[in-house]
Image: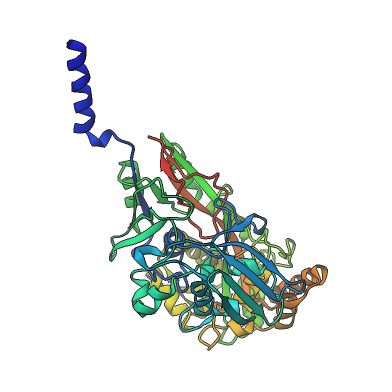
Length: 514
Protein backbone atom coordinates (compact mmCIF):
# COMPACT_ATOMS: atom_id res chain seq x y z
CA UNK A 1 0.00 0.00 0.00
CA UNK A 2 2.84 2.39 0.91
CA UNK A 3 4.51 1.65 -2.44
CA UNK A 4 1.27 2.40 -4.27
CA UNK A 5 0.82 5.73 -2.46
CA UNK A 6 4.45 6.64 -3.13
CA UNK A 7 3.97 5.92 -6.83
CA UNK A 8 0.83 8.04 -6.99
CA UNK A 9 2.59 10.95 -5.26
CA UNK A 10 5.56 10.76 -7.68
CA UNK A 11 3.23 10.75 -10.66
CA UNK A 12 1.34 13.73 -9.24
CA UNK A 13 4.55 15.67 -8.75
CA UNK A 14 5.53 15.08 -12.39
CA UNK A 15 2.29 16.66 -13.55
CA UNK A 16 2.44 19.44 -10.94
CA UNK A 17 5.86 20.68 -12.09
CA UNK A 18 5.82 20.91 -15.90
CA UNK A 19 8.96 23.08 -15.70
CA UNK A 20 10.88 19.88 -15.11
CA UNK A 21 9.98 18.76 -18.64
CA UNK A 22 12.47 19.12 -21.48
CA UNK A 23 12.93 22.74 -22.58
CA UNK A 24 11.19 23.54 -25.87
CA UNK A 25 11.64 27.33 -26.24
CA UNK A 26 14.81 28.93 -27.61
CA UNK A 27 15.69 32.52 -26.69
CA UNK A 28 18.36 34.26 -28.77
CA UNK A 29 20.03 37.60 -28.02
CA UNK A 30 21.09 39.67 -31.04
CA UNK A 31 23.40 42.69 -30.89
CA UNK A 32 21.09 45.09 -32.68
CA UNK A 33 18.60 47.74 -31.58
CA UNK A 34 15.82 46.51 -33.85
CA UNK A 35 14.87 44.55 -36.92
CA UNK A 36 15.49 46.05 -40.34
CA UNK A 37 13.51 44.54 -43.22
CA UNK A 38 12.12 41.06 -42.58
CA UNK A 39 11.99 40.29 -46.28
CA UNK A 40 14.70 37.90 -47.51
CA UNK A 41 15.02 39.67 -50.85
CA UNK A 42 15.66 43.02 -49.15
CA UNK A 43 17.39 42.14 -45.88
CA UNK A 44 21.12 42.82 -45.99
CA UNK A 45 22.16 43.06 -42.33
CA UNK A 46 23.56 40.27 -40.16
CA UNK A 47 20.68 40.44 -37.61
CA UNK A 48 17.99 40.09 -40.28
CA UNK A 49 19.68 37.52 -42.51
CA UNK A 50 20.26 35.10 -39.65
CA UNK A 51 16.69 35.28 -38.40
CA UNK A 52 15.21 34.88 -41.88
CA UNK A 53 17.37 31.84 -42.59
CA UNK A 54 15.28 29.92 -40.04
CA UNK A 55 12.08 30.74 -41.97
CA UNK A 56 13.02 30.31 -45.64
CA UNK A 57 14.38 27.74 -48.07
CA UNK A 58 16.17 28.00 -51.41
CA UNK A 59 15.87 25.78 -54.45
CA UNK A 60 19.09 24.27 -53.14
CA UNK A 61 20.90 24.76 -49.86
CA UNK A 62 24.39 24.59 -48.47
CA UNK A 63 24.35 21.81 -45.89
CA UNK A 64 23.69 23.31 -42.42
CA UNK A 65 26.93 24.07 -40.64
CA UNK A 66 29.00 24.41 -43.84
CA UNK A 67 29.65 27.23 -46.33
CA UNK A 68 31.49 25.66 -49.28
CA UNK A 69 29.75 25.11 -52.67
CA UNK A 70 30.86 21.48 -52.48
CA UNK A 71 28.16 20.98 -49.83
CA UNK A 72 25.24 22.12 -52.00
CA UNK A 73 22.30 19.73 -51.69
CA UNK A 74 18.57 19.65 -52.56
CA UNK A 75 16.17 21.95 -50.76
CA UNK A 76 12.85 22.94 -52.38
CA UNK A 77 14.16 21.44 -55.59
CA UNK A 78 14.74 17.71 -55.10
CA UNK A 79 16.90 17.48 -58.24
CA UNK A 80 18.23 19.59 -61.13
CA UNK A 81 20.02 19.38 -64.46
CA UNK A 82 21.75 21.84 -66.78
CA UNK A 83 22.78 21.81 -70.41
CA UNK A 84 26.53 21.50 -71.24
CA UNK A 85 26.86 25.26 -71.78
CA UNK A 86 25.39 26.02 -68.34
CA UNK A 87 22.73 28.31 -69.78
CA UNK A 88 19.62 26.19 -69.19
CA UNK A 89 18.79 24.91 -65.71
CA UNK A 90 15.81 22.68 -64.94
CA UNK A 91 14.70 22.09 -61.35
CA UNK A 92 12.21 19.46 -60.17
CA UNK A 93 10.24 21.05 -57.32
CA UNK A 94 9.58 18.91 -54.26
CA UNK A 95 5.90 17.93 -54.00
CA UNK A 96 3.72 18.67 -50.99
CA UNK A 97 5.75 21.48 -49.37
CA UNK A 98 3.40 23.86 -47.56
CA UNK A 99 3.73 27.63 -47.25
CA UNK A 100 3.38 29.03 -43.74
CA UNK A 101 0.04 30.05 -42.24
CA UNK A 102 -2.16 28.22 -44.75
CA UNK A 103 -0.92 29.88 -47.94
CA UNK A 104 -1.00 26.59 -49.83
CA UNK A 105 1.45 24.28 -51.52
CA UNK A 106 4.75 25.62 -52.83
CA UNK A 107 4.96 24.91 -56.57
CA UNK A 108 7.06 25.78 -59.59
CA UNK A 109 4.89 28.87 -60.01
CA UNK A 110 6.03 30.13 -56.58
CA UNK A 111 9.64 29.37 -57.51
CA UNK A 112 9.35 31.29 -60.79
CA UNK A 113 7.71 34.20 -58.98
CA UNK A 114 10.51 34.22 -56.40
CA UNK A 115 13.28 34.39 -59.03
CA UNK A 116 11.47 37.18 -60.87
CA UNK A 117 10.90 39.06 -57.61
CA UNK A 118 14.57 38.68 -56.63
CA UNK A 119 15.53 39.96 -60.11
CA UNK A 120 13.43 43.12 -59.77
CA UNK A 121 15.18 46.17 -58.32
CA UNK A 122 11.86 47.41 -56.92
CA UNK A 123 11.48 44.33 -54.74
CA UNK A 124 15.05 43.13 -54.20
CA UNK A 125 18.42 44.30 -52.93
CA UNK A 126 19.99 41.49 -54.94
CA UNK A 127 18.53 42.17 -58.39
CA UNK A 128 21.96 42.52 -60.01
CA UNK A 129 22.75 38.94 -59.02
CA UNK A 130 20.18 37.87 -61.59
CA UNK A 131 21.21 40.09 -64.52
CA UNK A 132 22.05 37.04 -66.61
CA UNK A 133 18.56 35.56 -66.24
CA UNK A 134 16.78 35.66 -69.59
CA UNK A 135 13.67 33.63 -68.90
CA UNK A 136 12.03 31.90 -65.93
CA UNK A 137 9.27 29.38 -66.67
CA UNK A 138 7.04 27.21 -64.52
CA UNK A 139 6.35 24.09 -66.56
CA UNK A 140 3.43 22.53 -64.83
CA UNK A 141 3.30 22.23 -61.07
CA UNK A 142 6.68 20.66 -60.47
CA UNK A 143 9.19 21.86 -63.06
CA UNK A 144 11.06 25.18 -63.12
CA UNK A 145 13.24 26.16 -66.07
CA UNK A 146 15.71 29.05 -65.89
CA UNK A 147 17.36 30.22 -69.09
CA UNK A 148 20.46 32.40 -68.80
CA UNK A 149 21.83 34.85 -71.36
CA UNK A 150 25.27 33.47 -70.62
CA UNK A 151 26.80 30.98 -68.20
CA UNK A 152 27.25 32.27 -64.63
CA UNK A 153 30.08 31.20 -62.34
CA UNK A 154 28.65 29.38 -59.33
CA UNK A 155 25.05 29.78 -60.51
CA UNK A 156 23.63 27.36 -57.93
CA UNK A 157 24.85 29.75 -55.25
CA UNK A 158 22.39 32.35 -56.50
CA UNK A 159 19.42 30.01 -55.99
CA UNK A 160 20.65 28.65 -52.65
CA UNK A 161 19.11 29.62 -49.31
CA UNK A 162 21.00 32.92 -49.11
CA UNK A 163 19.89 36.45 -50.05
CA UNK A 164 17.95 36.50 -53.34
CA UNK A 165 17.95 32.72 -53.52
CA UNK A 166 15.37 32.46 -50.74
CA UNK A 167 12.00 31.31 -52.06
CA UNK A 168 8.84 33.20 -51.11
CA UNK A 169 5.21 32.18 -51.49
CA UNK A 170 3.56 34.06 -54.35
CA UNK A 171 0.06 34.38 -52.88
CA UNK A 172 1.36 35.82 -49.60
CA UNK A 173 3.79 38.25 -51.25
CA UNK A 174 1.17 39.55 -53.68
CA UNK A 175 -1.54 39.90 -51.05
CA UNK A 176 0.66 41.73 -48.53
CA UNK A 177 2.79 43.86 -50.85
CA UNK A 178 5.02 46.12 -48.75
CA UNK A 179 3.65 44.56 -45.57
CA UNK A 180 5.39 41.30 -46.48
CA UNK A 181 8.47 42.63 -44.68
CA UNK A 182 6.40 42.84 -41.48
CA UNK A 183 4.97 39.34 -41.72
CA UNK A 184 7.23 37.18 -43.88
CA UNK A 185 5.83 33.92 -45.24
CA UNK A 186 8.22 31.14 -46.17
CA UNK A 187 8.40 27.35 -46.13
CA UNK A 188 11.13 26.82 -43.51
CA UNK A 189 11.09 25.00 -40.17
CA UNK A 190 9.93 28.08 -38.26
CA UNK A 191 7.11 30.56 -38.98
CA UNK A 192 6.75 34.23 -38.16
CA UNK A 193 4.40 34.81 -35.20
CA UNK A 194 4.95 38.27 -33.68
CA UNK A 195 7.11 41.39 -33.86
CA UNK A 196 7.49 43.95 -31.09
CA UNK A 197 9.63 46.90 -32.30
CA UNK A 198 12.99 47.24 -30.52
CA UNK A 199 12.12 44.20 -28.40
CA UNK A 200 11.78 40.89 -30.21
CA UNK A 201 10.54 38.76 -33.07
CA UNK A 202 8.84 35.49 -32.18
CA UNK A 203 8.80 32.41 -34.41
CA UNK A 204 6.84 29.20 -33.91
CA UNK A 205 7.50 25.70 -35.18
CA UNK A 206 6.19 24.79 -38.63
CA UNK A 207 4.63 21.45 -37.76
CA UNK A 208 4.12 20.74 -41.49
CA UNK A 209 7.79 21.23 -42.38
CA UNK A 210 8.71 18.81 -45.14
CA UNK A 211 11.79 17.52 -43.32
CA UNK A 212 9.76 16.85 -40.18
CA UNK A 213 8.26 18.90 -37.35
CA UNK A 214 10.90 20.87 -35.41
CA UNK A 215 11.93 19.60 -32.00
CA UNK A 216 11.75 23.18 -30.66
CA UNK A 217 8.33 24.80 -30.26
CA UNK A 218 9.26 28.46 -30.58
CA UNK A 219 12.09 30.99 -30.87
CA UNK A 220 12.20 34.45 -29.30
CA UNK A 221 14.77 36.63 -31.08
CA UNK A 222 15.51 39.51 -28.72
CA UNK A 223 17.17 42.78 -29.74
CA UNK A 224 19.77 43.76 -27.13
CA UNK A 225 22.34 46.16 -28.64
CA UNK A 226 24.52 46.58 -25.52
CA UNK A 227 27.13 43.83 -25.24
CA UNK A 228 27.15 43.99 -21.43
CA UNK A 229 23.36 43.69 -21.19
CA UNK A 230 23.35 40.78 -23.61
CA UNK A 231 26.11 39.00 -21.68
CA UNK A 232 24.33 39.49 -18.34
CA UNK A 233 21.09 38.13 -19.76
CA UNK A 234 22.97 35.09 -21.08
CA UNK A 235 24.75 34.45 -17.79
CA UNK A 236 21.50 34.77 -15.81
CA UNK A 237 19.78 32.18 -18.00
CA UNK A 238 17.41 34.57 -19.82
CA UNK A 239 19.08 33.74 -23.14
CA UNK A 240 20.11 30.39 -24.59
CA UNK A 241 22.19 31.74 -27.46
CA UNK A 242 23.89 35.09 -28.07
CA UNK A 243 25.62 37.03 -30.78
CA UNK A 244 28.99 37.81 -29.24
CA UNK A 245 31.01 40.96 -29.06
CA UNK A 246 33.32 40.57 -32.01
CA UNK A 247 36.69 40.46 -30.30
CA UNK A 248 39.05 38.05 -28.56
CA UNK A 249 38.44 39.31 -25.03
CA UNK A 250 34.78 38.33 -25.30
CA UNK A 251 35.73 34.85 -26.49
CA UNK A 252 38.26 34.39 -23.70
CA UNK A 253 35.84 35.59 -21.03
CA UNK A 254 32.77 33.71 -22.29
CA UNK A 255 34.68 30.45 -22.84
CA UNK A 256 35.33 30.27 -19.09
CA UNK A 257 31.62 30.21 -18.24
CA UNK A 258 30.39 26.77 -17.16
CA UNK A 259 28.09 24.93 -19.55
CA UNK A 260 28.76 27.28 -22.46
CA UNK A 261 29.95 26.61 -26.01
CA UNK A 262 31.71 29.44 -27.90
CA UNK A 263 32.16 29.19 -31.67
CA UNK A 264 34.11 31.34 -34.15
CA UNK A 265 32.31 30.46 -37.38
CA UNK A 266 33.14 30.89 -41.03
CA UNK A 267 32.78 32.86 -43.20
CA UNK A 268 35.26 35.50 -42.25
CA UNK A 269 33.52 38.76 -43.10
CA UNK A 270 35.95 41.05 -44.89
CA UNK A 271 36.22 44.43 -43.21
CA UNK A 272 37.13 46.88 -45.96
CA UNK A 273 37.30 50.65 -46.41
CA UNK A 274 35.65 51.67 -49.68
CA UNK A 275 36.89 55.02 -50.98
CA UNK A 276 34.69 57.06 -53.31
CA UNK A 277 37.11 57.79 -56.15
CA UNK A 278 34.86 60.53 -57.57
CA UNK A 279 34.82 62.99 -54.64
CA UNK A 280 37.51 65.20 -53.14
CA UNK A 281 39.98 64.53 -51.66
CA UNK A 282 39.59 60.84 -52.49
CA UNK A 283 39.57 61.51 -56.23
CA UNK A 284 43.34 61.95 -55.87
CA UNK A 285 44.91 58.48 -55.93
CA UNK A 286 47.74 59.75 -53.73
CA UNK A 287 45.29 60.38 -50.90
CA UNK A 288 43.82 56.91 -51.35
CA UNK A 289 47.31 55.42 -51.36
CA UNK A 290 48.13 57.34 -48.18
CA UNK A 291 45.11 55.75 -46.48
CA UNK A 292 46.24 52.31 -47.64
CA UNK A 293 49.79 52.83 -46.36
CA UNK A 294 48.46 54.08 -43.00
CA UNK A 295 46.57 50.86 -42.20
CA UNK A 296 48.47 48.35 -40.05
CA UNK A 297 46.62 45.07 -40.64
CA UNK A 298 48.79 43.10 -38.23
CA UNK A 299 48.02 45.52 -35.41
CA UNK A 300 44.29 45.33 -36.17
CA UNK A 301 44.36 41.52 -35.93
CA UNK A 302 46.31 41.75 -32.67
CA UNK A 303 43.67 44.21 -31.40
CA UNK A 304 40.74 42.03 -32.49
CA UNK A 305 42.37 38.74 -31.52
CA UNK A 306 44.20 36.16 -33.61
CA UNK A 307 41.72 33.47 -32.59
CA UNK A 308 38.76 35.40 -33.98
CA UNK A 309 40.20 37.30 -36.92
CA UNK A 310 42.85 37.21 -39.66
CA UNK A 311 44.57 39.64 -41.98
CA UNK A 312 42.91 40.49 -45.27
CA UNK A 313 44.71 39.03 -48.27
CA UNK A 314 42.89 40.76 -51.13
CA UNK A 315 39.97 43.03 -51.95
CA UNK A 316 37.76 39.93 -51.70
CA UNK A 317 37.77 37.48 -48.77
CA UNK A 318 40.23 34.64 -48.43
CA UNK A 319 39.17 31.10 -49.25
CA UNK A 320 36.79 31.98 -52.08
CA UNK A 321 37.05 30.25 -55.43
CA UNK A 322 39.22 32.74 -57.33
CA UNK A 323 40.69 34.73 -54.42
CA UNK A 324 44.26 35.86 -55.03
CA UNK A 325 45.76 34.86 -51.68
CA UNK A 326 48.83 37.03 -52.41
CA UNK A 327 47.25 40.12 -53.92
CA UNK A 328 49.46 43.26 -54.10
CA UNK A 329 48.14 45.09 -51.03
CA UNK A 330 49.93 48.19 -49.72
CA UNK A 331 52.31 47.55 -46.78
CA UNK A 332 52.12 49.57 -43.58
CA UNK A 333 54.31 52.69 -43.96
CA UNK A 334 53.31 55.87 -42.12
CA UNK A 335 56.21 57.89 -43.54
CA UNK A 336 55.15 56.99 -47.08
CA UNK A 337 51.56 57.97 -46.26
CA UNK A 338 52.63 61.40 -45.00
CA UNK A 339 54.83 61.97 -48.06
CA UNK A 340 51.96 61.13 -50.41
CA UNK A 341 49.62 63.52 -48.59
CA UNK A 342 52.19 66.33 -48.88
CA UNK A 343 52.65 65.56 -52.56
CA UNK A 344 48.87 65.72 -53.03
CA UNK A 345 48.81 69.20 -51.45
CA UNK A 346 47.92 68.29 -47.88
CA UNK A 347 51.15 68.77 -45.90
CA UNK A 348 49.14 69.60 -42.76
CA UNK A 349 46.84 66.65 -43.10
CA UNK A 350 43.35 66.04 -44.48
CA UNK A 351 39.87 65.34 -43.08
CA UNK A 352 37.62 62.64 -44.50
CA UNK A 353 34.05 61.98 -43.38
CA UNK A 354 32.45 58.59 -42.84
CA UNK A 355 28.95 57.60 -41.78
CA UNK A 356 29.23 54.54 -39.58
CA UNK A 357 27.11 52.00 -37.73
CA UNK A 358 26.91 51.72 -33.96
CA UNK A 359 27.08 47.93 -34.26
CA UNK A 360 29.76 47.33 -31.67
CA UNK A 361 32.10 44.99 -33.54
CA UNK A 362 32.29 47.37 -36.49
CA UNK A 363 32.44 50.49 -34.34
CA UNK A 364 35.50 49.30 -32.42
CA UNK A 365 37.22 48.59 -35.73
CA UNK A 366 36.56 52.02 -37.25
CA UNK A 367 37.80 53.67 -34.05
CA UNK A 368 41.01 51.63 -34.29
CA UNK A 369 41.36 52.67 -37.94
CA UNK A 370 40.73 56.28 -36.95
CA UNK A 371 43.66 56.10 -34.51
CA UNK A 372 45.95 54.59 -37.16
CA UNK A 373 45.02 57.16 -39.81
CA UNK A 374 45.62 60.01 -37.36
CA UNK A 375 49.30 59.03 -37.13
CA UNK A 376 49.60 59.77 -40.85
CA UNK A 377 47.78 63.12 -40.62
CA UNK A 378 44.44 61.80 -41.81
CA UNK A 379 41.51 62.89 -39.63
CA UNK A 380 38.59 60.48 -39.94
CA UNK A 381 35.40 62.33 -39.00
CA UNK A 382 32.99 59.59 -37.86
CA UNK A 383 29.23 60.16 -37.77
CA UNK A 384 27.65 57.30 -35.81
CA UNK A 385 24.13 56.14 -36.68
CA UNK A 386 21.98 53.11 -35.88
CA UNK A 387 22.72 50.07 -38.07
CA UNK A 388 19.62 50.19 -40.30
CA UNK A 389 20.13 53.93 -40.85
CA UNK A 390 23.77 53.28 -41.73
CA UNK A 391 22.75 50.86 -44.47
CA UNK A 392 20.18 53.28 -45.84
CA UNK A 393 22.54 56.26 -45.94
CA UNK A 394 25.57 54.56 -47.47
CA UNK A 395 23.35 53.26 -50.26
CA UNK A 396 22.35 56.85 -50.97
CA UNK A 397 26.06 57.61 -51.57
CA UNK A 398 26.23 59.96 -48.56
CA UNK A 399 29.51 58.67 -47.10
CA UNK A 400 32.81 59.35 -48.96
CA UNK A 401 34.48 56.55 -47.01
CA UNK A 402 32.41 53.45 -46.25
CA UNK A 403 33.52 50.78 -43.83
CA UNK A 404 31.62 47.67 -44.82
CA UNK A 405 31.97 44.18 -43.41
CA UNK A 406 30.63 41.37 -45.54
CA UNK A 407 30.74 37.75 -46.55
CA UNK A 408 29.13 36.40 -49.69
CA UNK A 409 28.67 33.10 -51.47
CA UNK A 410 32.32 31.96 -51.72
CA UNK A 411 32.95 32.49 -55.43
CA UNK A 412 35.01 35.52 -56.52
CA UNK A 413 32.42 36.62 -59.08
CA UNK A 414 29.79 37.37 -56.45
CA UNK A 415 32.00 39.72 -54.43
CA UNK A 416 33.67 41.38 -57.41
CA UNK A 417 30.33 41.98 -59.10
CA UNK A 418 28.59 43.45 -56.08
CA UNK A 419 31.42 45.67 -54.83
CA UNK A 420 33.52 46.58 -57.88
CA UNK A 421 31.53 46.28 -61.11
CA UNK A 422 30.50 49.78 -62.24
CA UNK A 423 26.95 48.53 -62.84
CA UNK A 424 26.70 48.08 -59.06
CA UNK A 425 27.58 51.69 -58.11
CA UNK A 426 25.32 52.88 -55.30
CA UNK A 427 22.54 55.40 -55.94
CA UNK A 428 22.20 54.32 -59.58
CA UNK A 429 19.41 52.31 -61.24
CA UNK A 430 21.48 49.10 -61.05
CA UNK A 431 22.97 49.74 -57.60
CA UNK A 432 24.26 47.02 -55.32
CA UNK A 433 27.20 47.83 -53.03
CA UNK A 434 29.86 49.50 -55.19
CA UNK A 435 30.49 52.35 -52.72
CA UNK A 436 33.81 53.31 -54.30
CA UNK A 437 32.43 53.97 -57.81
CA UNK A 438 35.16 51.62 -59.03
CA UNK A 439 35.21 50.77 -62.74
CA UNK A 440 38.80 49.70 -63.42
CA UNK A 441 38.16 45.97 -63.67
CA UNK A 442 34.79 45.79 -65.46
CA UNK A 443 36.26 43.94 -68.44
CA UNK A 444 37.86 41.23 -66.31
CA UNK A 445 34.90 40.84 -63.92
CA UNK A 446 32.39 40.49 -66.74
CA UNK A 447 34.69 38.31 -68.83
CA UNK A 448 35.25 35.86 -65.97
CA UNK A 449 31.53 35.70 -65.26
CA UNK A 450 30.72 34.23 -68.68
CA UNK A 451 33.89 32.23 -69.26
CA UNK A 452 33.53 28.45 -69.53
CA UNK A 453 37.29 27.95 -69.26
CA UNK A 454 38.15 27.62 -65.54
CA UNK A 455 41.84 28.46 -66.09
CA UNK A 456 40.98 31.66 -67.98
CA UNK A 457 38.36 32.50 -65.37
CA UNK A 458 40.86 32.30 -62.53
CA UNK A 459 43.34 34.45 -64.48
CA UNK A 460 40.71 37.13 -65.10
CA UNK A 461 39.72 37.19 -61.42
CA UNK A 462 43.37 37.56 -60.44
CA UNK A 463 43.89 40.48 -62.83
CA UNK A 464 40.70 42.14 -61.58
CA UNK A 465 41.93 42.00 -57.98
CA UNK A 466 45.31 43.43 -58.99
CA UNK A 467 43.69 46.36 -60.83
CA UNK A 468 41.29 47.15 -57.98
CA UNK A 469 44.07 47.02 -55.37
CA UNK A 470 46.34 49.23 -57.51
CA UNK A 471 43.56 51.80 -58.00
CA UNK A 472 42.83 51.71 -54.25
CA UNK A 473 39.09 51.42 -54.72
CA UNK A 474 39.05 49.58 -51.44
CA UNK A 475 41.48 49.06 -48.59
CA UNK A 476 41.06 45.55 -47.13
CA UNK A 477 41.72 45.48 -43.39
CA UNK A 478 40.93 42.16 -41.74
CA UNK A 479 38.46 39.27 -41.73
CA UNK A 480 36.17 38.80 -38.75
CA UNK A 481 34.84 35.35 -37.93
CA UNK A 482 31.28 35.07 -36.61
CA UNK A 483 31.31 34.85 -32.82
CA UNK A 484 28.41 33.13 -31.11
CA UNK A 485 27.84 31.31 -27.85
CA UNK A 486 25.12 28.99 -26.65
CA UNK A 487 24.36 26.75 -23.70
CA UNK A 488 25.85 23.30 -24.16
CA UNK A 489 22.41 21.84 -23.42
CA UNK A 490 21.40 23.13 -26.87
CA UNK A 491 22.15 20.66 -29.66
CA UNK A 492 21.90 22.41 -33.02
CA UNK A 493 21.75 19.09 -34.82
CA UNK A 494 24.82 19.73 -36.95
CA UNK A 495 28.52 20.28 -36.52
CA UNK A 496 28.81 24.03 -36.95
CA UNK A 497 31.81 25.14 -38.99
CA UNK A 498 30.06 28.07 -40.59
CA UNK A 499 26.89 29.62 -41.99
CA UNK A 500 26.52 31.82 -45.06
CA UNK A 501 23.61 33.53 -43.26
CA UNK A 502 26.05 34.48 -40.46
CA UNK A 503 23.97 32.88 -37.70
CA UNK A 504 24.11 29.31 -36.41
CA UNK A 505 21.68 27.01 -38.25
CA UNK A 506 18.51 26.45 -36.24
CA UNK A 507 16.60 23.68 -37.98
CA UNK A 508 14.06 20.96 -37.36
CA UNK A 509 16.85 18.94 -35.71
CA UNK A 510 17.78 21.59 -33.14
CA UNK A 511 16.82 20.54 -29.61
CA UNK A 512 17.61 20.87 -25.94
CA UNK A 513 19.16 17.79 -24.42
CA UNK A 514 18.07 18.71 -20.92
